[in-house]
Length: 422
Image (cartoon, rainbow, N blue to C red; front, side):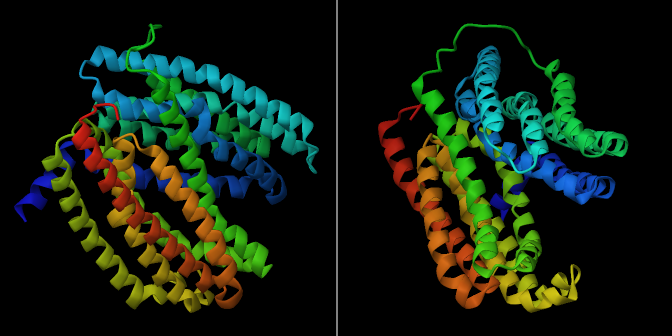
């Protein structure tokens, strides 16, 4: 029990409580921003903007070819603050140049594609420009984490979402859907300009730590995020295709909101501790003590969540709609799947990234996508939404256990080779 107290104390010492609070507030503010936009903008026009923006969100993990992912993995190996700032500057400049090419490609494709609604083309072109400031915001967050300034990282997260609410409220009120587009563009611009002056920035030579592996890591990490987004979207997509009932899509989205939202707990821990884990990745005793304490805490949390979902699932779902009570079994099954992510996947997926094996994460997610499609086509026609929940839960457990086993395999090899930049 003393180990758990020390573990929690160390987490709080790294401003983990600020990260958790910022994550919760960001989710709340993001919901408020979406609700405000929904009240101020006509549904049809709002839907066109969201369609265009979702395309950009899908591409966003590959902005800068994922160099911001390389920054958080390689910067912890640098012990001198000046070298970390040098790497930050390199990633900032190179990422902006790469984004110029990506945005140009998006604009050309948008012009060539004959969209049913011509406004989609224009919104897609304008929103593609958000790749510049959003990329800068991402590397600012990572640089604060690299410098062990998790409190500043948390403040930036909250600041961004407060500005988002403010801009959406003002611009959408006066300019409707055009104002919403402006708000999406100006929010990261304003945030990046406000926080850039808090970091050292100057043009510099290529850091010695940068090589082909550095670029490959970022690209595969970004690609993994894209495929992971696809994995999350498949259930809803296939429910719509197989059941041909838009109401079922809405039902599944709502019954999955609460289980999926619980992932903020493990995400907060990893946002706080990823840099520390990477810095100490060759300290076997530290890593395995962390694994033991983390797994114990999240096993207890998962048991509590499972008990609540089993005994009170119907009551919880009734807050959305009385008709959702019939999905209490699906709600429990989804919570069962989420527990695997809380206990295993959230930790070991990040540990794989810490040792540089992001390609293993990508391989696991690709297999999970294939199994998800096959499982849904088998179970949705027979069991409906419950079938989709079973498939999702199975896939979560599969990817979680796979992450554990693959990490142990590569970590043992890493310790034997003692290669600092494996």
